[in-house]
Amino acid sequence: MNDTPVLIQLALISHTNNGKTTLARTLIGADVGEVRDAAHVTTLAESHPLLTSAAGDSLQLWDTPGFGDSVRLLRRLAMSGNPIGWFLREVFDRYRDRAFWLSQQALRTARESADVVLYLVNSSENPKDAGYLAPEMNILEWLGKPVVVLLNQLGPPRPAHDEQAEQARWKHHLDSYPVVRDVLALDAFARCWVHERVFYEAVGKLVGEPKRAGYARLFATWEANNLERFRLALRLCAEQLAAAAQDSEPLEADRGGILRSALKAVGLAKGGEQQRQERAMGRLIERLELAIAKSTAQLLALHKLDASQAACINARVRDNFAIRAPVDKAQAGLLGAIISGAATGLSADLMAGGLTFGTGALLGGVVGALTLAGAAWGFNTSTERNQSTMQFADEFLQTLLVGSVLRYLAVAHFGRGRGNFVEGEAPGFWQAEVEQALAPHARELARLWQEVRSGDLDKAAGRVSELLAKVVTHTLTQLYPGTVIGPL
Image (cartoon, rainbow, N blue to C red; front, side, top):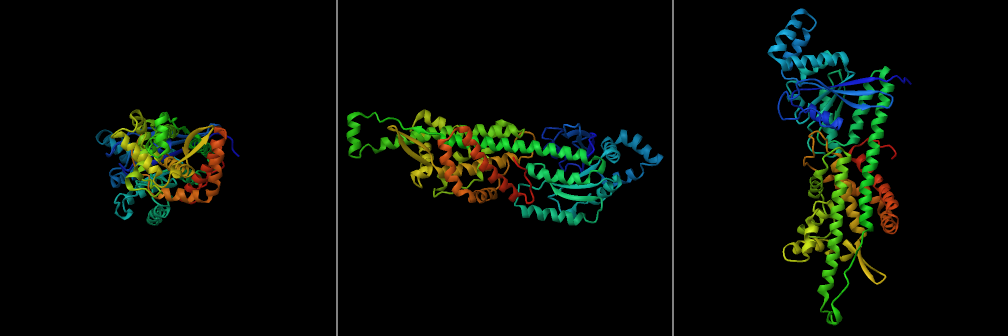
């Protein structure tokens, strides 16, 4: 292999306002350039480092000004080799139409330096209706570089077969242009890192032979970094789940005295016992919500997103999370808020006032949602050393695990293109995929929770992380057929 460091340059090109800078932010993982819903936002070609290797290799991404009048631009480029063309470009265009001049400069740079051209299109358009497409294909032919077409603005994540059909439609339309070597779906707003792998693999096939060894080192760096982030994300989720499984809350001692004991003996003090259980449940829920909020913030920071937006992520999961228990709509909504972490802070306020009117009624609704299908569904009660305690039951922990995977997917699919997290969809079909991935591990789960409750927290989190890796990996391979995730 050639050990000499290489510089590989990708030119990102599109019609104006098709989302180039947004996609650049997604790939780079940083807020570069300016993102606005307007034409010609990018006025200068800007180079940004995508990847670097320990050997000194570098992969650069050029974000170029968008094409406006593609037909006129093509005519001007065709004249670039004669004195009249030079005069029009360097004298007339440079001072009378700077945006047009900058487009020409960016294309000349791409022709001279780019190894691969990335051409971004608006997938929401029908390719037959995009009048600028044909002249811009001719511009790409003029560049003389291999082109990968990227489908942007696909909308919320959809089942794999729907996205494949969209990709096939564009591939069929672009088959008549030999310069187009591949067509990929790579939305700037909601694409997971495993889908970026497909992009890097496709680009690697088009890099010239002298630079392929360097590109292989760059790709290995990308893979190692993303697998490490994936492993850390699973560990964060596992630590939160293991802590919830081990958490317990003692029931308050009954201090009712002789009269309370007498009433209890004849069955007239049952309400007091229920209140003690509900207060214990409330404290468990409070700690759970705070732990979920902390875990979500850590996931966001790990993915270079604004950690203060954890509540938005959790609300996104809650709104698309279906409770699999025989509870009514109102109770299911409260339970979903608990499991997703979107109810963070509620329990702390509720516990300050106890079971009082108003806030106490809401806490009663939360507890009712957990106990309506039977007390064992939401909580376990046990007595050790004459002290009664409550813990989350296995069935609840399994539902909590599903919610944790959905939270990871919501974070991992945010494209970073818009800077801080912006609310979007966590589609409902994700849950079905997660539950399907979890189903083969039903027996393993029963043993897992037992081991987690009795074991060291660090080792317990490791066991949960192993299971999460299986479930999340299977889910991602279903969402993105052909996905390959290396060993963690």
